[in-house]
Image (cartoon, rainbow, N blue to C red; front, side, top):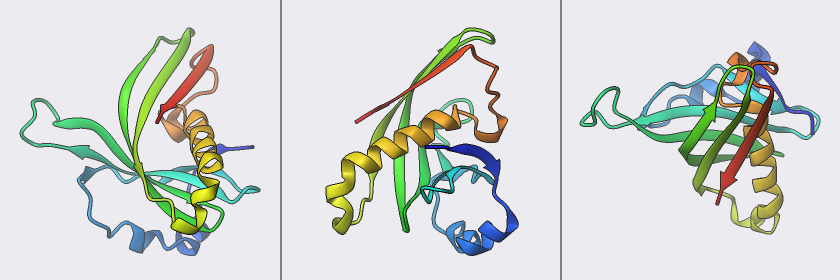
Length: 147
């Protein structure tokens, strides 16, 4: 697959009706204006929000985020929890997330292994920062999605 990180073009904002998508209830903030997309496969991933709990210290971030995952004509929501990220500039980096939930439509349940594989590939290209990630910031980037 050929996933790339880019800002969402105006025509795609309209095509996928992001104005309506952004009106859904959130458990935090941070809807992104960029995505990770494989146009040929008709798959994209966009962070919808980062959960926050205002009774927690600091920013109140829980480590849980919700993502819009569009897979070949079907929009799904995936919730993931950050398990850890390590790495320094010029060194290898690894990031792990746990898949808490994904609302795969019943008619696509037989495709679950491929959907999860594609979700993991999109997260791998996202590299933890989407358009803000640099391909050469880390000497090697490894991503693991724990089920």
